[in-house]
Length: 381
Image (cartoon, rainbow, N blue to C red; front, side):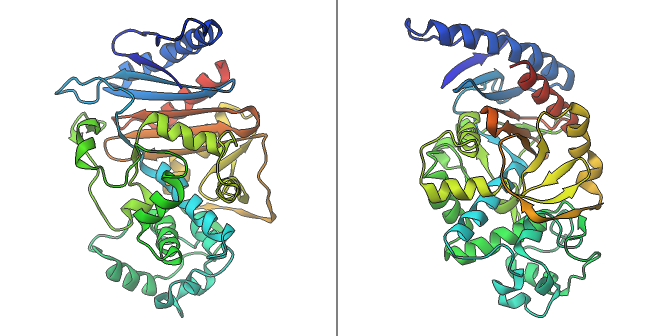
């Protein structure tokens, strides 16, 4: 991994003397990144950004700005960012792994694995529906007043679908959070344990956490709202399953590499990761995979902005089921955005070209700006 730290100006990483070719490549990529990221930070008043790039078989991380406007500590390789809903791609991978290992079946009804929901609307909602937001109109957030799993299950037993399952895509933390609950139950351990045992440890993501340990608190970036107010995420029901991960750019880049078959890992885990790229529904400009959002490559910026629009986030949108589902393929752009009140993230990659990008920022700023920055960077690289 080549790292370049940037505070006010770009500083190239020191490389071995026999790595001239890599140095030249890094210099070129670093210059491209600087031309895009520095104006972005200035425009939106972003204190710090970490950028991870995979290109030409090499991974690069570039750090900009500060992790806190108070301490002025620079963003560096150990800086932890909240990645928001990019967490959902990890939850989807856990579900895929549980299917690969025979612990659950994604086409099965959700109530099969949660007896408390038998006889409810979840008899007609599959795990695929939960992982593609097509359950029938589950709410974006866990409703107010629900503070534990018992209360959540009471709410879900009484929930009435607004649409038939598999006909509308309604982006929902409750949907993927419930899938995560089912996965943990199938694994027989708490969700965090399943995440650590199945994904984080095998992928050697050693600086990725659902609960930041005390020894890492000093590396945890301060987040800022769009208005500049300091904030970090608060715990909540289904938080770990939907938005709870804090990680570094380098660790998240390893996850991207695993999604592009670039790591040597257990074949069952690799199969599970790849199968999250299966397309289940066509939703406007994009194909909805198991959490990942897919576009045929090459793709133009207009389609990416449409697929990542506010309309797709906050409104229900009709979908067309793909029969059979679209098998994972190389010639696609896969992406996922993530937001908490004080952090913003975006991940995108093209498996067949082994190119990918991770954008992590400690301030909330528009999704469209993230997508455009990533698109511009990968297009130039």
